[in-house]
Length: 480
Image 1 (cartoon, rainbow, N blue to C red):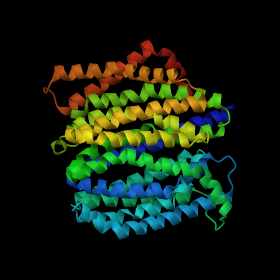
Image 2 (cartoon, one colour):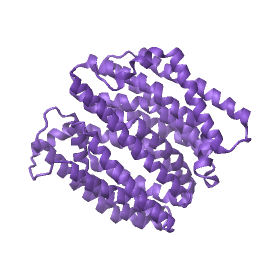
Image 3 (cartoon, one colour):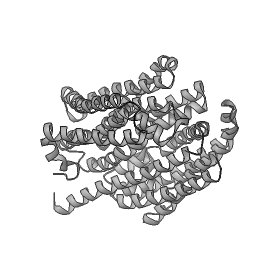
Image 4 (cartoon, rainbow, N blue to C red):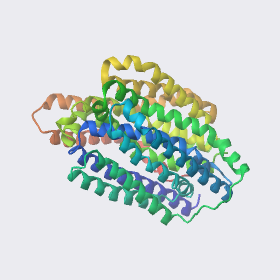
């Protein structure tokens, strides 16, 4: 590979992480500020509304964005067909929410849900106007433009949300923040993207797109219910206040997943698609990236798990007591998500969308079967079954990896065990430290010192026992 291409790959990684890192950092700061003004019940109202709109967005997506990225020979006719199909379905789902919002609000006995759902449903249409442009930019590795769009939207939306919270707009602070962010994102994206839709649609183009995306559609539904089914059950059995607390813990983890894992998914799907016919090269890059990135990223989740009490109390306050134990558990779920994130990107790039489909179906079946056992244990029970179902799903991913890239099951399992064992000393060290310190120091001091000690201890471990891995860390940025 020439130096120009290496620089392009390196730049893509930097901008992808910049987009997700700064974007999610802004979102997290805004979330922390809003939590000082809003109650768990108010967060629960928006969380429930977002479950509805997020599901509609997965239907509207139709897997067409992934199809655009995966296609080697992409014509304007295919892109036009994807755009208009996306927008048409988005408008239908927007009308559907308007029609059934009162019924949903009646079921949960929460009148505020009617207006919240109707206003938030606008984001479905906005997404329909941006999804294909985003796919084109990802395919062309233009993460700098995507970063500019995300950061601008997050900043302006965050300012609006905080302003509304200061002026006692309550639940509408979150709604305003999200609608404004989506709107600004649309405006910036159409400015930086040169592509414009034309009425150039054919039945053949639609069929070609859906030959790949039909399996992605089903997979997206399974991913949605695997991620949201626990929240739906929590809202039904424990109420919106409990959903607000539970959603807070999960949102922290989802923010971290988006920061650390989403760039991998975006870049690797594009990168592997270009070498999809070379199974050996895909396999080599996948295993190296998985192991090296796991050594760096997984410990961050483990450190947060050990320090969850101080994290919640310092940033969110005593009103959110109860989220600590949930966060401590779902941190493990977040750490494990690196496996499906990278493995599924390789499956999609190789034109095997049925592998993630079956894997996520198994996850969902296992999760559903465990729900009756989780309910008696309250919110903590749901965190536990998330972790167990994810482990079950990872084992199925390893089996599909063997079928797709001929990576032996023993090697995959060894990678998982190695990464878990490598992070165990940090957790034990921090728990012993907390036991020794007790409540003699403030939450800030415990959080800060624990983080420094945890990072230092893991860095020392890597230097002593994994020095060869550190030397090859450049594989995350340069493709050989």
